[in-house]
Length: 278
Image 1 (tube, rainbow, N blue to C red):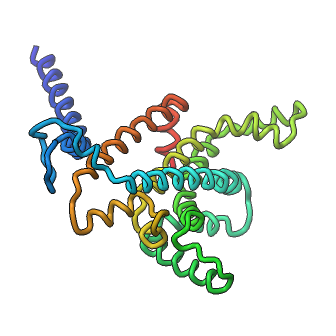
Image 2 (cartoon, one colour):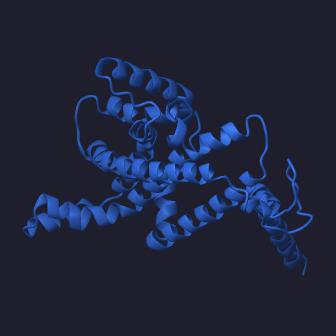
Image 3 (cartoon, rainbow, N blue to C red):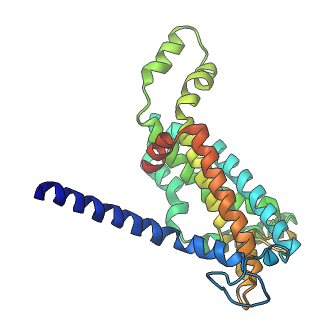
């Protein structure tokens, strides 16, 4: 009886510990969502809400939605570009043997090791240098942001795809080639479907890194091409607008929907396996 009671107590303590961790992790999100439904004119965060209202949802400025659209387009494009760079790079790093392989791998990981502020300053100086030479200034343009964010996001695709490739059974490709398939057909019909969980995971990380980036976007974004994170930073620099809580709630639920859709498409086990090994 005492042993059973001891196991029950351990189970209760364990459940309480897990519940406490989840409460700690999700408490900020709950506060933001709850405070966004508090009505009335105010310049502070009020939680729990004193009166439920959609007041601040109607006060969201149009330029915030424009900045949000810029970030979604930027993140999507950067994620696609990172996949186009990252998948061939991962194949080369995992399967090829050449001199300086360790150096090349370190260069691909460089964006993870260099502070984002330094990356922002570097691209800013580079764009001004290129602009002085060619007359084409990329600062404040969407293409300039895409290039910089692709640089930031590529290591995540390379890491996640490399993790899947290291467990890849090469006999599958050998069987396809022996049956007469071309190298491209083998890659498209055999290799790519197997590594797709890593591609999906890397693309998701790439999008989130681009969407949440502040330092690089502060240096390179301007006017109508300013990303959402940088726009929020400027708005909260000197004042607090509760309508930011409302649009943040949209983003929270949009992110949850994205994660759920990706989990349905790939499977949570594959996401955890490929993401955790990157």
